[in-house]
Image 1 (cartoon, rainbow, N blue to C red):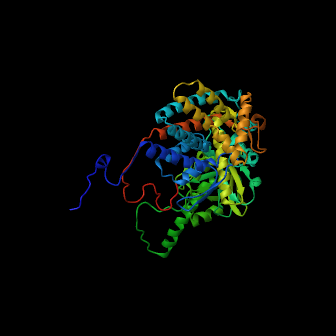
Image 2 (cartoon, helix red, strand yellow):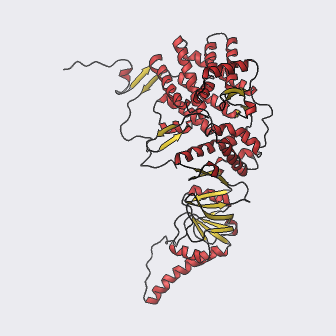
Image 3 (cartoon, rainbow, N blue to C red):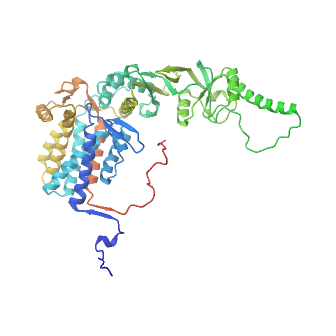
Length: 545
């Protein structure tokens, strides 16, 4: 009989195959290290000169982007502590739609400083209490740095919108922000409802067409559908539209029946009645004044023949989400099956035409008079990756517009706000007694990461930049930040670099919350993973929709 060790302690309590990590070295510092690795990845993509990452996800799809939210989404982070940072980034993306990189990089930075404090001998709970004090103070100081008079703005004034949107778009597409902001702001203002707080991001669509360059991009008041019309009618103007969800075709009956036919005439008549029935339905649609039929499913041959005869244009939109947007653009009511529409159910379009853009045939649905329904930004670019990245920049711009509709206050950009926060928090730490002061001083130092990263990504000397920023801020110029074009420190209000207050507010808040959550963990207990297929794997090649 072999001598077997009896398990003791926590081993005897849990099933075999579990992992148990506890104590400072195993749990806390390992967690901090994982978060540090994640923020190192996103940090080099921060700011206008941020580097692109090439991410290939589990479905072999290639992403080339510097958008932190996309990067961390596609990385499939496994480490539980690093996942908390990913969640903070996602929360920021859903709340504001921009600033996910700031949240993740900043959280990583304050955790790295916490690592140093722990090695100095501070207890994590003292660090957390210091960090909580610092974030409250930082939010208070952030409120004081808001540009006076920026809280009331006219969201339909293009100048003011571009003024606030420029920094967010430039951080994704540096050098092209002027062209993009122009397009985005025009599209947003076009679809902005009477009460700007109800602005719906979904109303600004993006159509990506390969070919041409960014300067060929344009805006369509309405929708751009990829694909051709079904019949031969390629253009109608000022037309009424009928939308049928169930497709335009002869419908099979619900019940089964047997038809007994005695003679050849009856067989002929039987075929004719079907034709007559379809013709009658199509004629009813044509008589209601509709010139365009939009079908959500297949269009039958016979139905198409009669549509051609009555000069009806036939469009097929198979995606039900697109169909809903089409109804929103035209004001039509979707009818379930092919039946004569009532006048109230019909929508109206200024024009529907098939155009060829860069070798791709697209159907352009224009509705200028319909007010704020849907607006499409048609993006042109040489490759798919460039187009995807442009789309992300547009997304950021539109989300920034939504954020400024809720709260239009702005703070100086170009790292001016962060240096001021660092300076004021450091002064605050001197007034504190107790061990909190070390944590607050480290929290203040963490803000230097932002100007440092911006300078490094632009290839400038980070130390010089930071010291000259501190010198300027000490002499009372709170608006001095980095001018990345010339690589010097300048007053950012003259360069029109402004960041939204809400973006900064939530990014700092989420970063501090995530960091404190990671620091509160002192043990990791993982049970043995269950066998069988992975839980989060999407079934065979399906996408999220």
